[in-house]
Length: 314
Image (cartoon, rainbow, N blue to C red; front, side):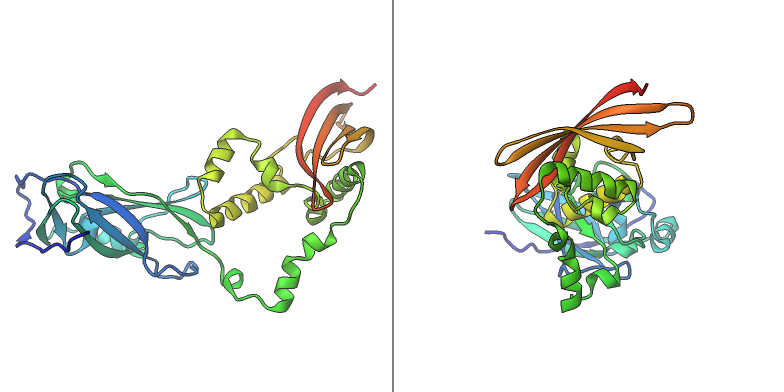
């Protein structure tokens, strides 16, 4: 049973060195009253400090937690959010501030809330990773810090977070409704034709985007360690990059013409071989694509591909 801790005496920070023996507690974070967030949301994080050792530990805790906590928020692409003006101005001050010494007995814990906007600027609707570092000897006295777990934060737009009406639900299922049963070679031809005509919604109809994404070992490890909402964001970003030619570049390379040369399949799997031609300024390049498909709910879906360069077409 976790025990409630009692606070000790109040101290004041000065520019002189503090000689107390300080031990950092373990730190765990979670969303406080989690809900659907937009860039304007006041996002609160609950920080839980715990003594997981067999002995009492002591640390200093400021009234203003900016002096104890550093917050790291980055997009899934690794781009860090900028510090807020409030954070920069507070940390630039050289004035005394109130803090107290806290003693935790084994298995005791202490928690507090912080607001992300006090630390960083989150102004874009996308997905982020959130973690904190807790400095038991206060940031100005430096020293080691405890690093928290990572939270996955999804920021949506007002439109995305609006409750779905019947019309919006129907639109969301429109893509799956457009799929029809067809032979595997026909599904591949449909996909290539859609790509040649830049009809990207049609292009993705017969592509199992998740299976294609997971063929890369690094992406697979990242993907499987994320919660469902972050997985959706990763696939959305992956799809966007494909349409821009920044992911699966060979797969979305648009041919001038193509020819299906061989189709083999059984009850659940198929392979379609296609010769694809790419007109350059002074020559035509030829490649052989082998598309692998799997039947899912009676629909043939492309889940992988192999490309072989055949040189210049003569």
